[in-house]
Image (cartoon, rainbow, N blue to C red; front, side, top):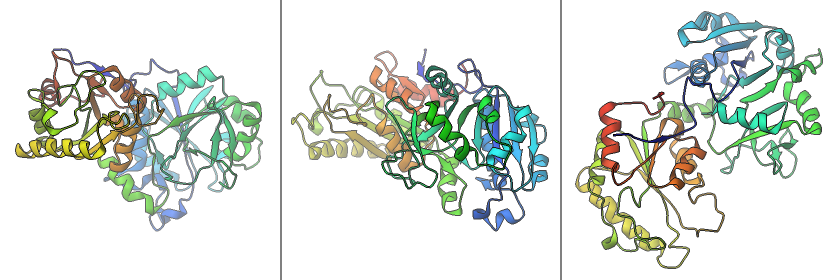
Length: 418
């Protein structure tokens, strides 16, 4: 049996990009994390029992980057003693140590002889599940000199500090976050050309404040937009949420029609509980995932609401019966998300748009790169791809029960190379 996965993300496979170096800024005092940082550098704060820095190092390794340059300042020996030469992380790690009072631009300028022509610049306090290959493709296509990663911030997670134009070029960047019409947040994970560092002055300057205005004027500062929430150790208030994210119980995301129940003909909908017919084995598949400890989510397009052939109350009754059927065998679905919009309304939630996956991600602090989305058509596969979530296509020959058995019996990580 061949299970078809759709994903751009393959840890350890760097064939999709040409980056081999990540540069991590990790020299600040971390005053907002006191008292921990009175005796420890910020990236060593434990998250789920391990230093946050470990998560970043493993991430770049899994994205096919082999070398890391750590730019240190405050208590550098603690980090160097922990990381060493990087070999236990499968990396080659080197260091540039400068005065603790140096700002980001000065640290990069001093490290200039150690920089590749193009490198991935990261901050030691933010984590985002990134697809470096997709980032690199946009960077090369757009002919930028620097490309930052931008959280869409549709949920108002923090204050916006920039604005992108229609071509995903940064047209406004405001570290004070006071300008009007800002939309999006810079979260680091920037691909930077070394010549951007060459242009920095020798003085002690902030990298963004110094480099970005000139790049914006040249239209050479790009933005890689993501709807996946980022997680931070920047303050004590953010730590509980970051802990939940890294605890990441395994998650399965299911389409409904054609995966759980028999699909109606095109433009026809399940409008009553009586019309909901389980595909043989699909209830048992949900039970298998439940027993294995997965979080389980349902996302479904329901354009029949917009077309007036059913109401949201009708849909609620269908789902209430479906959930009762699952409870009868000890199975569970943790949350249901549906799109009530019509085919041509241009919403962000109707698949193949990834909006419902991102909503589940935010509400449950999921890592979509470590979840699996199971659907029955190409719209599902595209939605998973756009959300960075590995996806599996069920068919008449490979129904959900067979996919569930394959995932559980083989105990295979869908992110491993096949």
